Length: 439
Image (cartoon, rainbow, N blue to C red; front, top):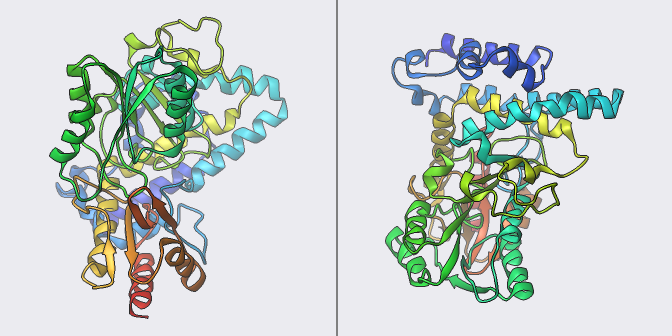
């Protein structure tokens, strides 16, 4: 992209963020074709704007420095633990603060009579981003709430079998264990050794457990421990062949890699929006196929627990409407960058730092870095250090924030950059790993 085109895009984005923030539902009411309009207003990057190659921006560090300045990044601490929770762009923070101040002027009026009316347009926008129907998407607080709504709402009985995996997220594993303890269901655990398995081997490992008496197959789309992307659709197809239903944990893949939720073969799905979408903390999404909604009990009581309406999963009572409505600005920001460009940039950042250290004899990349098997999230270890020791040294000596992983058969430090991370930031990581390895 030419420098003038880049400046035009960034100027328009900055101008949009400076305009008094209008509730998402008002934007929907005044412009039903809001997506295309918003792309045009912000100078949305498309092949026509970049000489047929929008990916030219992937390596444009000047552009990404401007994106970095749209976040409130710490000047001292380098945050490479975006897999846990991501910061919000300044426009999202400002939206939340504005909505929150509005609510405090007259809470019961602005919360219930104004902002609460924005949930339906927001539902439509989230569904569009997810490639699903608005009648299959509900707004919740995080992946755990979404998936535990599903796990505890399924009509399973004693002896019913559920396939899980040794690398599932602990909250989900514990939820299934609680159902096994309380209701007598039987858990069948797939053992994965990643990255030392091909996709065929992964599918075969699930196939061994997906017997005709299985009712549910739980699939973690992108493993949080080491960033490995599982072949979700292939596993789901195996489940559907024997009449089982599938639950997909999309906590680390939504707005990180490109897909539509139905493409994963998911009957049920949950994700957090405060990770890769950079929405306010405590926001999430639950997806249930339309014909399965009536049979799934809500986690919190609703007037009709057997209603076929997806909204029965939103009976939370009083919640922060400011947090919820500011999801709209996070969606705007996602569209302004573009999902394809975002994923390509994250792949580029992973490749940049892993290529720089992978040939060092004492540094080991424990994630398959091929684009189809991982994206931004990656795990590394250095000979002579436990994961905890390595994470501590990175923080103490270099002020690099990571997370240490010692779970099942995964050992190392998880490195997770986001789009506000630039190559200079990763040079700091590269130097730190090389110095520690040489010590």
